Image 1 (spheres, rainbow, N blue to C red):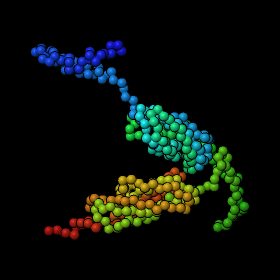
Image 2 (image 1 turned 120 degrees about the vertical axis):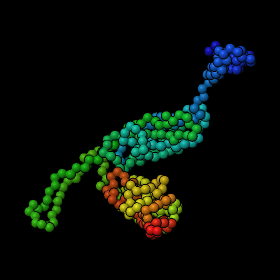
Image 3 (image 1 turned 90 degrees about the vertical axis):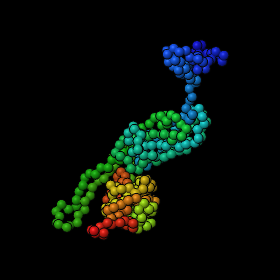
Image 4 (image 1 turned 90 degrees about the horizontal axis):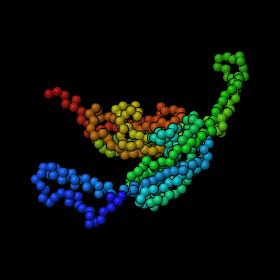
Length: 340
């Protein structure tokens, strides 16, 4: 370090290594710019490194009960800190539920919490009550994550999630045994009574067996005679015709050449519409502004439709799409010209 200390009098400009009037020597003319660059690099190396402006960290994730039933309410707690050198604006903390150790798009967002603005070096304890999903796979162990939404001024996002923790599920175990019939000698079309024993041998309480069934009603376009590239509104109703509650999902609108609407058709809008969780027998009216195709040459009649994304444990998926016909009014059919 002693070698790096130099007085203002002794510190020279990088260009001072070059004589005002360089000699004619070809070697010196070559070395002059090289020495200037090296001296500049050395001076920059003496400057202190700048810390990350805002740097969120999440640590100490815990849960009020790590053995749960489907649908339980639990409280997650975590510590969020700003270890950067500048103040951080308020942000959002997200709690996720995962079937494996890799946080990804297929994982479930359980709930969110607000993280207040934090000064540089400050921290805050955050706790939030979340509901365990109602529909779960037949797994005994799940993983919970907590991640803070990164700031636009944040340079280091690799520490925005707390280490995952394990949450164990009390499992339901239905068993059916000892079936019997009231008459062993029966005739065709005769009514008999069959008796059996149904029991739950698992550790979790078993609710009445239910199912859910997404249904999409025929969509209604704001205009059925469309110009090319015209913006119009598509509206429909999504219902749960099952006997149990259905979790949230997504509705998307499509453009088709036939009445058989499916997710393989051309998407009409850039993004889907969120469908909220629905109780048995309830529905939600949804709509979105979409644009008709900019150019079409196969005919004036098309179909617009809507499909709701199926979710795990859905009983029937054949009624998840529905469509209606529309026409393109400025379509030009060259076949009417005949031959010349």
